Image 1 (spheres, one colour):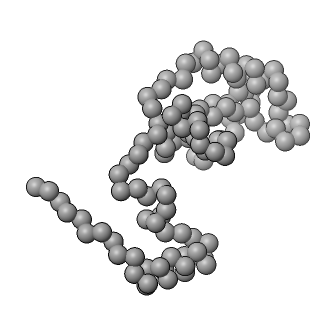
Image 2: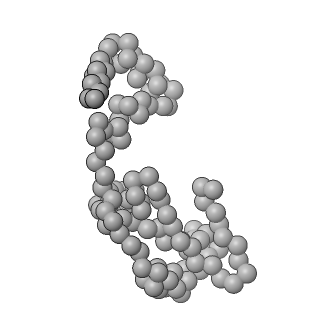
Amino acid sequence: MSEHKAKQQWTPELLDFHQELKDKNMGPLWASVFSAPQPKPRAIPYLWKKKLILEALDKAKELLAVGTGSIDRRAIYLVNPGMKHLEPHGWGGATQTLYAAVQALNPGKSPHLIGI
């Protein structure tokens, strides 16, 4: 059984509503670049090797002094190779809906939890 969806009409009332949202510092997700009729995944299958992550964290521990200046944590986020072209730096995540990071801690320190 095929399902036919009627295309939304962009009426003057709807366009006025879009402006109302904009005036209230909001926006219509249905009209944004994030709302495509068909998903266009950018992420590709990828495995971050534990050894490489640990090496990168060790190097961050060598090079960064936490608590001095603007450095408050040594965390490295994972970027899917299919999304590394996204700008500004950091927009690419592990997938289009998942942002993941690992953090280097010294013994006895508690993790700085973000977004939990």
